[in-house]
Image (tube, rainbow, N blue to C red; front, side):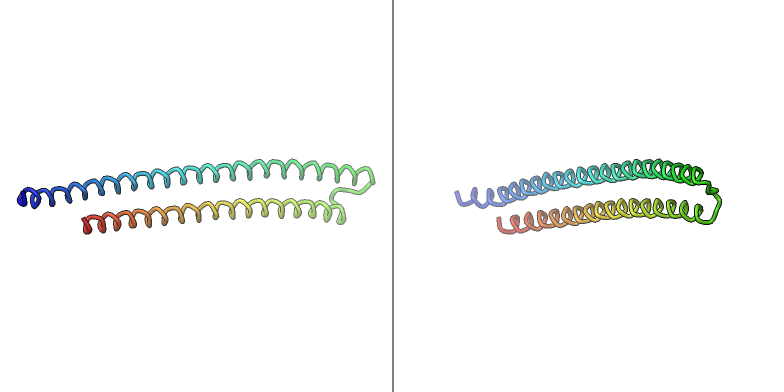
Length: 145
């Protein structure tokens, strides 16, 4: 009976180690899947940010064209030429204000995308940390059994 026990003990510990390795492998696959899903979601958010920026740019240009047309019509009805100094300054101001609005929109999208990239980096680091923790836990469990 003692011989059977001495033979079974290493076999059981090998089986336990294999079971632990399978569990680690499964956990690693799940972590990788979560990371891929996170990256896909982040890519969708970036595309949405770009789409929103393009829509905002279209709206900004349309608004600018209407403002310039209205201002030129107002100048014309008042007898002021479009190329005159003061009228040109007013139009330049409209362009300048519109350009500032464009820059702010681009800055907002760049910041949002930077946050998304930072989130991806953090998720990757977490994934690596979890993999290492699982690996070390498996090693420890194997040594203890």
